[in-house]
Image (cartoon, rainbow, N blue to C red; front, side, top):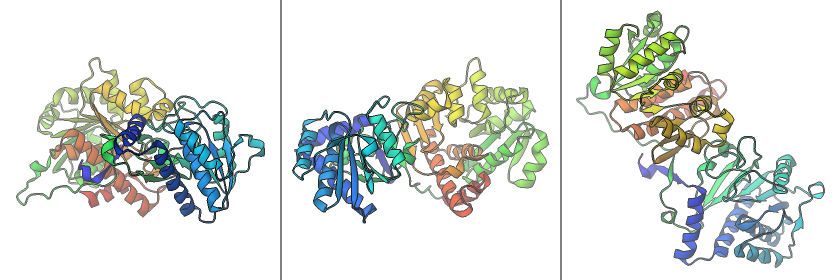
Amino acid sequence: MDQSVVLPLYTAAQSRAADARAISELGVTGFELMLRAGQYAFATLLQTWPGVRSITVLCGKGNNAGDGYVVAALARDFGIKVTLVQVGLATSTADAAQAVVYANDQGLVAIPFTPAQLPAGDVIVDALLGTGQTGHLREPIAGAVDWINQSGSPVLAMDLPTGLDADSGGPTGGAGGAVVRATVTTTFITRKIGQFTGIGREVCGQLCFDSLGVPESLSGHGSPLLTILPPRPPLPLNTYKHQRGHVVVCGGDLNMGGAVILAGEAAMRAGAGMVTVATRPEHRPAILARRPELMVVDAAEVTALHALLQRADCVVLGPGLGRERWGATCFDRVMSGTTAPVVLDADGLFHWQRAAKPPQPAVITPHIAEAAGLLGQSPQDVQANRTGSVRALVARTRAVAVLKGAGTLIADEGRLSVCGAGNPGMATAGMGDVLSGVIAAHIAAGEPVYEATQHAVLAHALAGDRAARRCGARAMLAGDVIDELKASS
């Protein structure tokens, strides 16, 4: 992926290291960074809620609390009524202690957290815990999070909402853990991976970023957030179809023929020169009626299937494959009969698990439940630690792993990317079949597998966003996304 069209995302450890390097290499003090963070957050508060007359600032401990004390002081100086609340013991850093004095100089003294007597104010500022938070929330922080979420007031979170793991995009305490649901989150120095995947995309609300004057070079190598699709190179004038790649789609047991149609048509719309569908012969009339450009072979014809697989540049295995004997036979024949990269989706993943010596696919594309099956976990646990789960999938399969969902993750051994596009309307039947076809088309065109998968996931998500705008998120179908692929192919 062209680095000029991505935003880097960082882990909590990288973010803390960047903060420390800024202090040691730029000569800026920790309190100066705290002042800058508070000033940016307060400016964002005024811009978002220009008529605000009262705020309640909840502070925990450490530098995140210090940021909150600065916001409280600035608001008091601006003439806003401020209720400053210290939740738990004010165990603080030297910089946070300086921020307390800064607030005291404005006549502010924090009161203890007593939820029954606490006014919510026009806006609540969450400065309880920052990027260093881990594990289950304990009292009184847990009670403060519940109070914030039940208050009905809009919330400005400092750096990230309390309870959100900066790395995983799930609750710090695992599945079911409480997280502040912010209206706006102001984040500083780095954008964090967990803000863009899992529940992070939702609980952060509007994400506002400021580097605080710290150059990106101090943060090291980040994981790219994919938002802008780089243009594909123009086709040479003397191109012929074989140069654009031959995709084979295998699947479609009885009553599931639509899946291979969607995958095959998506591969063609994504630029494949030829697509052949290996399926049950009962589906041939429907496939040719829907899309005559697709070629069809009987997956049970061993000689024909073997010859077809020898000509394939990429194989999609799994759409509509089913879990019965027919699907198992197809899986075994395809995986033993091709040297081309294989994209495993849907029931292809099921058959991979049952294999005595699982062959190595090129790409796997599980949703949460499928990933849970591969990892022997619950779907809730996978969702609560998406980054850890996608890395575990890579270790388990040695493939490029695509963990679908809000903030789809793409990973291999050593790399991680986050898709910054897509919408809830894409949670509908056939959408994964379309994605597998798009990935295969990019691989068949000769792109390296990881880069091809990045491009395909983003192209699919952007097409989904266009389809949602055109059809509405609730009404959009997988076929609508295929129609929108034209804009990026």
